[in-house]
Length: 449
Image (cartoon, rainbow, N blue to C red; front, side):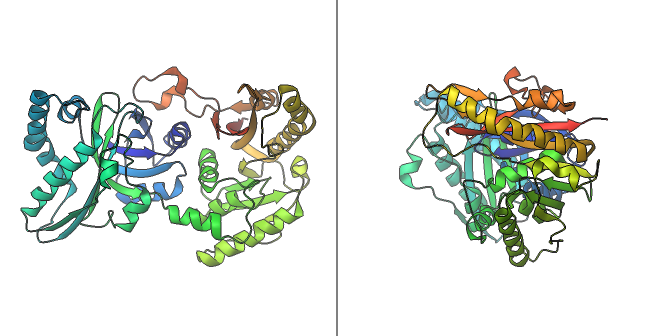
């Protein structure tokens, strides 16, 4: 079994949910065997080709980097070698061990056939906790940069490394390099490398980056598509997560019945997924079609796009157009309520829920169930509201789905972990956008026979 380090996105739980869901299925069957707030350690049952993980990275929305693990070591040696407060005897002994034993064993697996080469490398450290660093990250990076450079120069190489600004090296909040920098400095190309040190509760994993998220692609889609309305648009990353929660069969059919400006449809098209998009608002249908046509031209894609697969339709009357049991999966973000510049009282939120939200979701979900195939999934966003005193108001979509006979799918069940972990990760639904008054909640339901 091979182990890989996944660098998680901003929302750790969403990232773990997305990858853990895919770990049920071929060819990505596996377990989460360790994690921190920044990284997840995944042990796959069978991954034969690095290329398959590059394809996986392209598909994922909540993962920044995928890295091949070269080795793992007790975290203690790094804490002793690069302490926040210097302890002369311990740190000298620990650094000698790192120099003479640990790093020389690692480097030959990262840099192969490199004699007389121009080499660029970078070090990224993902601590267990950013708020209370256990290791002096700046000192660790400076030490590794110089040691690795000198080691590689023995083979007559021209060696450079990514230099963090001095003021950041001295700070306690030194961020690892972003995927954008990995691409700009060609760190995925031979003989270059990004070397990752990822800390968990008890270990330090050393890994080499083999794939990264492409932020330029998302930026182009977010900023350059002809029709943008951020107040009604779902972020591309989240759209990818919802699609991955469906895990559609080959040639499966995806439906977004609240397609808006078409973000979910665009992400589906980029992955070669067959899709339908509907919306009650004709202007949004026009925006979706314009955006999809732009995507087709910009990325030279070949997919069907006409009035047969993107069209005006009420989400509560899907069965007036689609046959029963005809759609493989549904990924969507319905109306979440009016945009708010300040929080409301619970009674005000309850009025919005009773008059607008609950009726829309109940009728739409029932219509979705009718046209969904047996064992098909619905990945759907629902709103959660924040009161003035920071209490949350949720209309409990899971209860509505359960009463309709839909099965609630846990997004992060304990069974996906290869080691015993805290019960707080046994999630039925996941809350995101926590700093806003209208928050998103990811729900996953299955139609059972």
